[in-house]
Image (cartoon, rainbow, N blue to C red; front, side, top):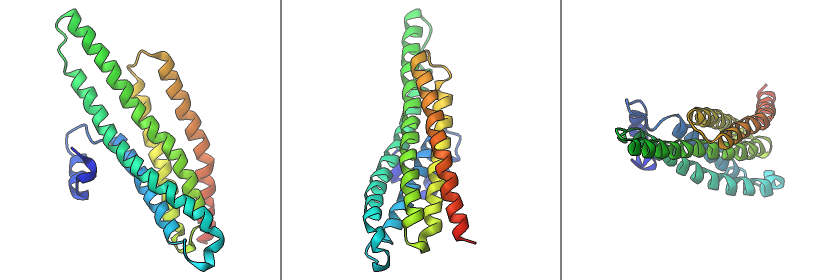
Length: 209
């Protein structure tokens, strides 16, 4: 199933079905894609307008980075679904003999590590996105203020949900170094993002008074 080829209605139907995929990890990446797209929109509605000339350089960078991130998030949405399908396939492997048990466990460990690595990348890109969105909030065309604010919150939502998905997929992994490294990175990234969310949200609220 190619998620980026589905209509919005079909995607929502798949999301609400009894299938485990697509799930929260793909949704996290799609939040990132939407936040990036909104940031790019703000940049485009700022560039070329003389009254915002001083912001053009920054908005050009926002546009380029946001367009890149939108594509990468879409790829991650698909990769998240594909990764969990590999977990499901590994769980279905036979385990009658010792050899089968060993192969199944090896396959499952590999699949679970991949299932944790994909949302970890979503988390990393979400940190990049919130910085771009904050730039859009503070220097974008004022009529797009709430769009930029939405991008900030979407970046934060993407990061939070991605963090959940990293943690749950670490639960059965035996590679302690990998597990502890992932946990540490999740907390560090989320910790850096919280003040950026607070600052951008405070700016938007102040402008809307």
